[in-house]
Image (cartoon, rainbow, N blue to C red; front, side, top):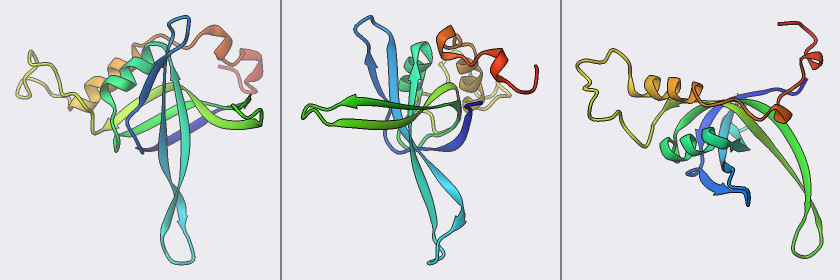
Length: 151
């Protein structure tokens, strides 16, 4: 099983790029607080690189910004590449299947929706919006046989 769930804050605005085939891909880093304090009594954080594909990438780029709090559900990916000097480099990142916007969105609700008429908070509206984004490509999903406890 390969599943990662994180809650943290973006350390920079998402960077949106497109593959040569035109597939959108966004990347950003999330700071996740550790559950303990160090010897000096300070809470440390881990900085986790996140990669998001397809429509979900465009939505993250449009609505998230540095400081936005998000919940990430995805898988750990470790890959290698050769840099310009011919040195083999290792990259560890989380490929997000689901991104929930928890607070601090770039955009606010559209003008057609007034705050008096709406019971939802702006973050909840966009949280539902991201859930309508299509699931990852089939080759990115885990096979049902890999899950030790059935669905």
